[in-house]
Image: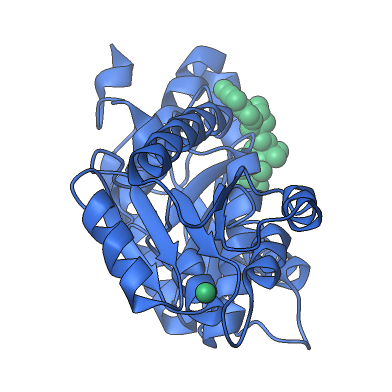
Length: 318
Ligand code: GH3
Ligand code: MG
Ligand code: MG
Ligand code: MG
């Protein structure tokens, strides 16, 4: 069965998202150290507990590499109050779907109504009962995990068993924003199988599909960092997101991927390169800012790919 090579398709739903086997993560946000400690102690057995003492820290934690599965948020805090934190969380695609429970001493209808309008999943007033908080967290985390699984399924390309374009689009937008905040480089690779129409015509569509599966899995296997992503862009084209990677770095990764495909040694009578299947790669890099855009980055990668095709295929251009 060709699907068993070069890496058997495991349960990729978890893989797309990184490690998912460990405990759920809860972020507790409160300006009172006493409350933080109390909740941390109550939750640390069942959760990985993250803490923040104000709204700014909370947003930093929520947008970091290890995101919380749920946020317990105090309302009255200096610098930025809980409502503002909620608004900011809802604005960003990477934090929009993290459930938020407000924990507050503001015990009146107007405040609770406002909180619900902002999209919080629960509103708990202080003084609180620990067992009830734990019960509510557990239920909300379960629902969140279920939604995550549903979403992961919608992110998968059926034929190649890697991420699809929907996943790529969502991830690249998130990484663009993250790179912009951090002042770091973001690179994209566009990868296109060479002379694939001829390959299909010569070997048939089934063999063509088989080949696309092998290419996709090989690309995935050869990306080393967990923050990198390869997706099927469509047809015989793939796209990679390389976070925190400058132009030289992107070209190096592109070369590694190009060679890995050559080394697969998939026979191809229609190829003019050692009679094996090859790919062309376009690399583009940007330092995201006000003066450029994600669309431009993707366009640049496309142009570079065009250059690679024009100048003879089986190469990386930037
Ligand atoms: P180039 O080197 O310039 O990229 O030439 P090409 O033939 O690869 O490019 P072109 O865009 O002309 O043709 C792409 C071909 O890829 C057309 C189609 O037969 C094939 N293809 C696209 N999607 C699939 C797929 O899902 N399965 C198979 N078997 N073939 C596909
Ligand atoms: Mg407070
Ligand atoms: Mg193409
Ligand atoms: Mg092609």
